[in-house]
Length: 354
Ligand SMILES: *Cc1c(COP(=O)(O)O)cnc(C)c1O
Image (tube, rainbow, N blue to C red; front, side, top):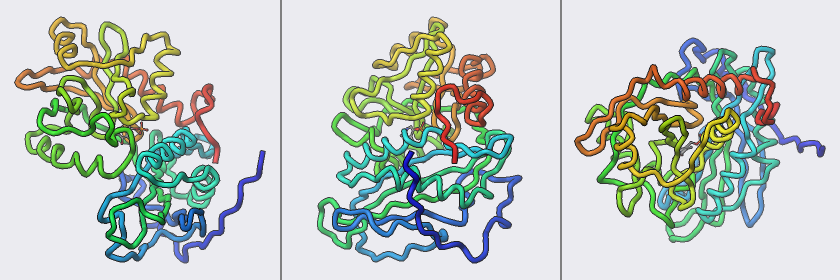
């Protein structure tokens, strides 16, 4: 194995660790002492460094502020009972970041910066990793355009950063969602499969309207016919119908390929379930609800792992579910959480040690 290149570190003068209330971590509230930073200039990655989390200082013409050329990742590191630190499938995040980069006409980030740099950053700030069950260090890598110009074209310079922060166990109350009929998130040929800020910006009005009506999220439908299910907020969606796992397939490029989704599909198959990845129409879901074969509905993503749906509304038709009876997904949620806490000995080789 090639020894990872050491990235130069400028250490913080006074740690902010004392300001963290580990009994009430929440999500995205605290940031660790350091960040990784690298610049892409003249076709090359330069000035890779780790320094204190701080103000970046930028000019008003920074191109990302105008044309949104920006992508990100979201992942977690857990500390196990023996104090060992593992990141869950970081190479998948690295590959996905670079797929997003390709779609957004941005440069790829090398593995040594993304994966090895991430490990070095986490090692340095490991005191911030909470050790409670399902508590973790959230990791946010992101890349954005930094050219100073108002010209509309891909930027000639970029900045890559990794920031991290401790997050608590993510209790997500069973969600109430409705089928979005007015707005769309992604169309074939668009950017739905890229983890880019613009997809989120375009979704905020829809989620604000959902909240006003007392709902938590919307279920996105295909842009052409509003007939086929895509995903929910920052989560992929799965259904259990007649004991089978059913989830929209990724083939038309409108759905983000979740690493949680990918992992669940593998685990469900291993446990003997049939998993169908295919087009899922809302009519099929309504029909399955009416004939009693729709057993479970849940979203999945890094933040919550699995989040159950207790109400799904389509037009005026309300589908209500007894979340306590959703044992297939509840058992799987526990299995995957235990897996990340290194309680299963990592049979799939998904945990990378820091
Ligand atoms: C990040 C994300 C997901 C979930 O992906 P994970 O890798 O499982 O966290 C799903 N949908 C969207 C739109 C996302 O941005």
